[in-house]
Length: 323
Image (cartoon, rainbow, N blue to C red; front, side, top):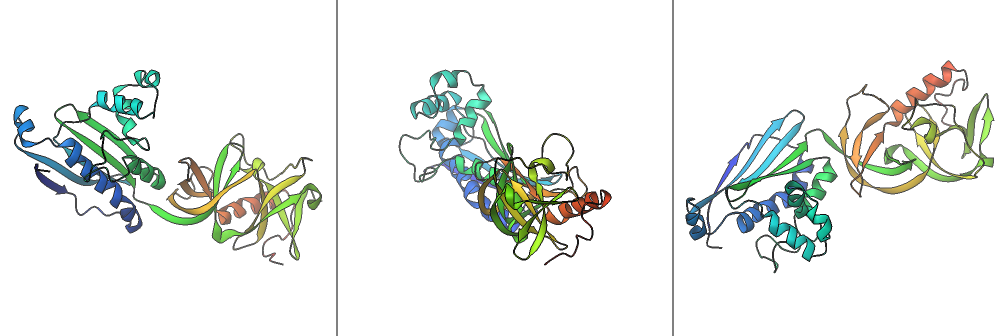
């Protein structure tokens, strides 16, 4: 491109999970290309602003608590929020009325919208058919954060905040009321459609038949509700049909009725410390649409259930019941 650029790398000793690193390759590459293409000026333009002909692009990594911080910065022209706003409106990504109500920071964040570009033609350097939305979508996927800072004509910095403690899980995402939850596939034996007539009661506890055994069934609405304490006293109305997750733990099997099955896939999970509030969750993950789902730990969940049920003498000797 005929530009003079010095690249500085700091923090090579910062370690991040290999799976996370592989996900970060494309976003970081795209940010570097943007810094070269959009950020750093040509030597003649830099001289007009009293800058040295050689621009600087810095990649730095550091630790911050349970996170790794990766920053891509340059001493180029910074973000032109006026141009960003005009382009977003022209490309139909936002209306002029909506754009006029945005703060400078909110206007700058428009660069993360899918399809946004300040280029009139696709650039061989930074365009290549996709934009900064790849950065935001990757951060959403791994539970990270992205932040923009800039000073007009002085430079810009994009910061990535990446969780250090992550795990990959294959899980089923389901919905209870307006909240999403995930259950690891290794615990899930089946998903059944059941009718109210399939639910039987004994000592105020409900059961369903699964293959050759009777297993206890619980309502996720009562156990996972955002309001009040979890209750093992499940209530099933007469509306008829339910989705029942058949869950197998180290100790036993049980069924859990949920409102809706969302999707099945592979997700990046962020661990929660054992004993944290609602300790039958092992962590959180980000679903396909960017919303957060709590990851259910069925073993901890069963410990809570059996303790509660034994105290109420509702299911005698339920552990070890594998049929």
